[in-house]
Image 1 (tube, protein in one colour):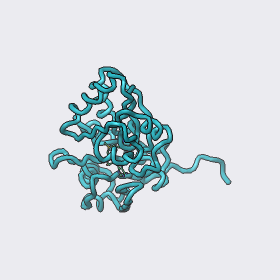
Image 2 (cartoon, rainbow, N blue to C red):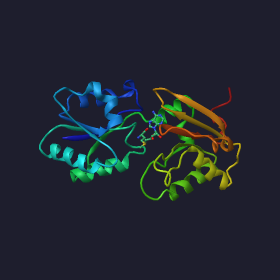
Image 3 (cartoon, protein in one colour):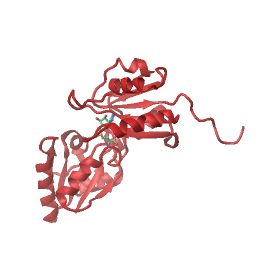
Image 4 (cartoon, rainbow, N blue to C red):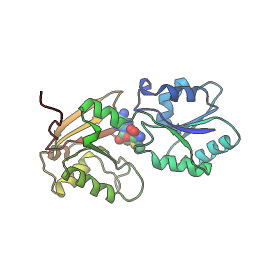
Length: 231
Ligand SMILES: C[S@@+](CC[C@H](N)C(=O)[O-])C[C@H]1O[C@@H](n2cnc3c(N)ncnc32)[C@H](O)[C@@H]1O
């Protein structure tokens, strides 16, 4: 009796109907504070809310798993869509439960960005640096994606100074590795809420700072020509 659901990019209007239904019928709703806040108005008064942060997530998820094993209907809410930059948290939920857990997709910040910036998924690669562990394979992959003339939608890493890999660091890394300084970049913040948008070149991006709630689009310099029939 446990399901992980994508809560969408921040505005409740982007939560799926199925997600709202599951929250409305839950005995326990759990998640990081900012994400539970998004769905707070849908949580039944009788339900238990389990809030967590990076430090106490293991202990809090153990509590949710115990409720699940006791037969309670538990919902764990994730930011955006679980399937982009959410799998490490999903792994924590599954570790706490001791078995695989069902997921319900949500609308990702990457989807909203694609809509705002008008890029199609077919010609775009999604990469997140917002994850634990070795980032170097993901950095290399980003280089290959851009060298292969694809767009990249990138979630930066906002953690402590030692690990932080924000748009300015990403731009500096790409420039050091031979990506052209004129490559077009967009950074969008707080999509679906207090949106802010920045557009410029890769070299200009290296000197900019953005909030934790930002997502980056690096456009290819050689977009694919149309492949539909001539008008
Ligand atoms: C752990 S990742 C989760 C991403 C999420 N699973 C998704 O599909 O959007 C969290 C990061 O996603 C980005 N993000 C999530 N929602 C956003 C929004 N509404 N606007 C801009 N960036 C967002 C931010 O970089 C944030 O720090």
